[in-house]
Amino acid sequence: MPQSILDTILYYDHIAWYYLNYQWHNVLLDVVLPFVRNQWFWAPLYFFLLLAMPLRYRKTGWLWCLGFLISFIISDQVTASLLKPHFQRLRPCNNPALTGIIHSLVPCGGQYGFPSSHAANHFSIGIFSAVTTGRYFKWVWPVAILWALLVSYAQVYVGVHYPLDVVCGGLIGWGTGVFTGKLFNRFMPLPASNARVLPATTPS
Image 1 (cartoon, rainbow, N blue to C red):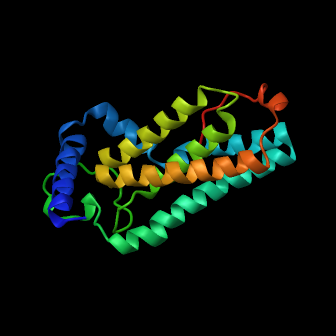
Image 2 (image 1 turned 45 degrees about the vertical axis):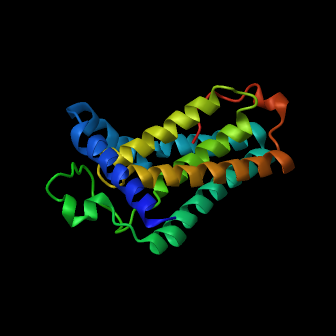
């Protein structure tokens, strides 16, 4: 990519970050969004899914749980172990030039932030869940996407990522979820008869 184009993209990325993190914040979001982006906040939901699927589908449910975990592992390793060390883009909370203006609400975490592992991981498991169950429950798709978008937005809001970090992380997670979800549907799909009575849950 020509340097001038890259500079333009990064310029507008910083502008978007300035508004999302510094200008557009309020007391309510300051309280809520640090919880939304915390993986432990969603732990009961993950536990419920990993319990409900085997109870409902037996062997296929266990395989679904395996696909769910594989989706997470792939997106996490690609972003955290491969791409972040390669690009070495400092998080906004680690950028000395932003010390005076950043609205930081949580510990900064690792040194580098591109692409966002949080965004990639939540999109990967959300899209995997939508691809594998969405043909029986149409509402899973919008819920999965909105959920992952909310987590991604929270990462920018609390000061640990730029918008471009979460956009690229989200695309990686989307691709991962589609790939693993389609593989699952091809070789071990959930049976339609059981899917009709699957407990209604949000995708993760």
